[in-house]
Image (cartoon, rainbow, N blue to C red):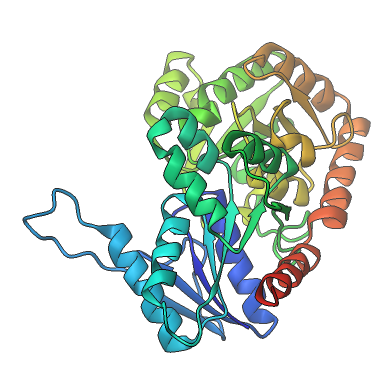
Length: 375
C-alpha cells in the first residue's frame, strides 16, 4: 500500500507517533511518503520505502503570513498524483485534515484519489475549547475524512461529544518500539545523573503550560526533603524559562539536570526510578508509555487519557491535577519501599509490552487501512 503521512515534524507526541508509524509500515513493505515542512523529529536515518517531500512557502507582499496550508494542500495533491497514493493519513484535524480535503478536491476527476484518514491526538479538541472560531472547520474536516481514529477511548468520547459526531471513531492506541524501549536496552550510565544512594526522577515533555512543569519541580522539591534525589528534565518549550526560574528560586540547581530535546530518549529513560507526568490534560500520554516500557513507574493525573496507559497501584499512581502533595507522598512511599518499587518496575515493562507493543498496534492500523480503502 502507498501511504502519505502528514504531521507536525517537531518533538511532541503526535509527530513522534506518526513518524514511528511510518517507519514501522515501511518495514512491513508499505511505501511511505512524509509530506511536511521539515524532516520529522525521529526520522533520523535512511530507511528503505520511506520518502520525504518538503513543503515550501513563498513570501509574497500581498500575504501578511506565508500561506502554508495552501502550499501543503498543493503538495499533498502533487505527491498523491505522482505516486498514486492509496491513503493520506493526517495527524491533527487543524490544519492537516483540512488540507487533505482540499488536496482531494484538487484531484477531482483524477482516476485515483487517496482515502483520507485523520488521527486525533488531543489538541484538535482543546484548540476548539480555547478558540471556538475553529469549531466549524474542525468538525467539517473530521467528518469529511473517510476514516477517523483517536489515540484513546477518552479522546474518542470527548471528540464525539464536542463535535456531535455519529461516525465511527476507531480507537487505536499509541505504541512503542520494543527493540528500542526496554529496561535492558540502554547505553545510559546512571552515575552520570545520580549516585547509588540517590533516587532519580525524570520528566519528558514539550514544556507547554498543559504539562505543568512547575508541578514537576514542586513534587521533586517535596521528595528531595525526604530522600536524596536528582531530577532530569528532557525537552524544551514555552515554560522552560519558568521552570529554570523556579529551580533557582528553590535552590535546586545543583540537583536538576536539563538535557533539552533528545532524539533517543530510550538511552536515558531506563536510568530513572520514577517518571513524573502531572499534566492538566493528556489524551494518551506517549512519554508515560515510553517510560513504562523502559521499566519506570509513572506518577500521573487521574481524569485524563493516562487512565488507559498507567495501571493505578500496579505500575504507577494517578492523582488529581495539581495535587502535588499527594503525588509527592505517593512517590516517597514507593521509592522508600524497594521491594514494591521493583515490583512496579517489572509490571511497567510487562504491561506495556503486552498492551502497546508496535507489532500489535501497527497491525491494527493496517487492518483499518484495508477497511477504509475497501469501503
